Image 1: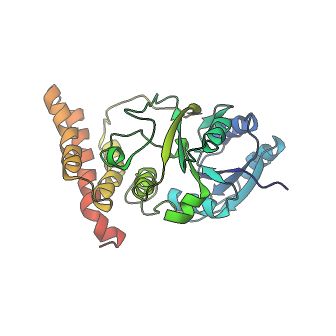
Image 2: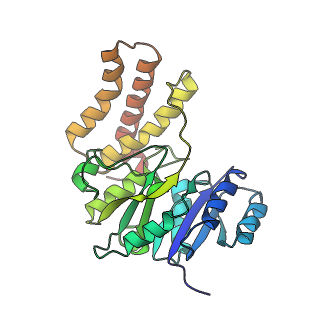
Image 3: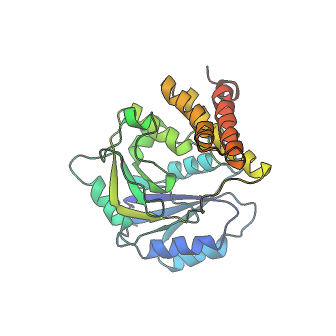
Length: 287
């Protein structure tokens, strides 16, 4: 049995039918030396027929169970089980361009030997604002190439060097987002070389932009915004970055004369960022 060059860690809970499109896109990859590690956070066996379908398509699947649900912790379980030289993190409802893994593999193989490769999220149409290589200075000011877990590919040795995702951050946690950004910030601060590869294309549907119209939606937005606030405190980001992040969500609607749902949404974001920033040391156990 050959050792895979790449490992794809897919943490999932609650979804089933969405996996079909992802598995079909993996079966269509022009680069085939990879393993798929499915970290199953469901309490039942709903994934079994879908995993059998993946194996039927020729995908090397490793199935792991993990409880309780925690996206960052589940990914760390997958990282520990990974055998590939580099690791990616597809969502259960995304899908890959057929040449994505080939482009990522080719980029890792180049002479400059990056430790991280960031793919292009087609639906977001994200482009680098400056150079194609990420830097701590731009990333810590939130001015660099946006990085989502679905676009992130890293050498396994990097996880051994700086650790995995911070399980206090992300979906299912009080700090409801930010685990990917936290990892990239830690990596860049440690001197890792990350670069953007626009030919490597990943797909994920993007919901139409809409202003949250009810208190429940704004509460969810506040929950996610705590992750950004936690990053402010954890990484001791520049004061001007924090001030900008706390003022911009309310100044934008005020400058437009929007005093209804837009302003309420901005206030929810600011409250969430303050929650996260002030609550980081208390809840994370860090000094």
